[in-house]
Length: 323
Image 1 (cartoon, rainbow, N blue to C red):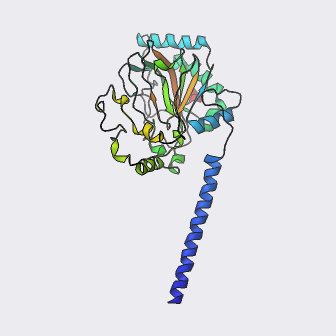
Image 2 (tube, rainbow, N blue to C red; image 1 turned 90 degrees about the horizontal axis):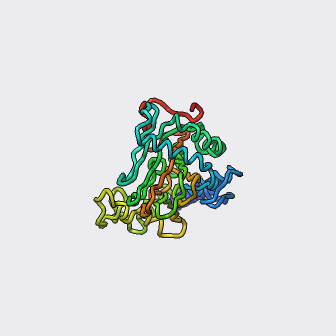
């Protein structure tokens, strides 16, 4: 009997030691990659002088703004391309991207001609080469388009653009980053419905997210798209974004996550991670909100969300280096 008790105690002690070792190295890994403070810019006032600091700021927040990125004349030229595109002056090209958008009411997602936009794409990428080398190595062009939100459009539902790459801390490392980069083509103030985001949710994986819901007893309050079930606009495709949303409500439970609106001056660059919770805001002003944007994906991991190419020939990849 004593022999059995003695062996059981040894086994128990060994198991405790193993758990201690696992936790020790897990904490070291977390400290190394997540928790060690790194020098950052203010999220809404970044610059190009220190691109490692730019990387740090983006990885921490999931959305950043670089003011005065493009000169006003570039913005005006891009607005002219948008106008010509809307008037049918450009023929459709097999390499053009095509991306659907949420909440289409008074919200346009205009495919932009890559050839005519090459000058602006290359200028953008050349200014942030270190940033893209670190976060989207050998970048692939996923989107080349323009968002136009018109007065009267309602907010989108809160969402992240990619899902599979947010499942767990470990699985996330298998997937390539997708980063969208938008140029404000005129001054954007709050009434025009700028991009909204919840800072640092790019680092909130879904395992931890659903654990937060469970401990706060929120699991059964929302539908499969995260909209609260008792909202009168739940089934209204136009006003659905007015409903309470689980992404916003759950991250609003503590002070860690901050809700921001990306109002900015003409020529500013707004960059957001496909993993951050965000949405297009409600335009209750009297002017359109035009944004030229591209999305880049690194060529160093699996494409997130069972990714399908956004160009007509899905067997192709458009590498920035080949433009």
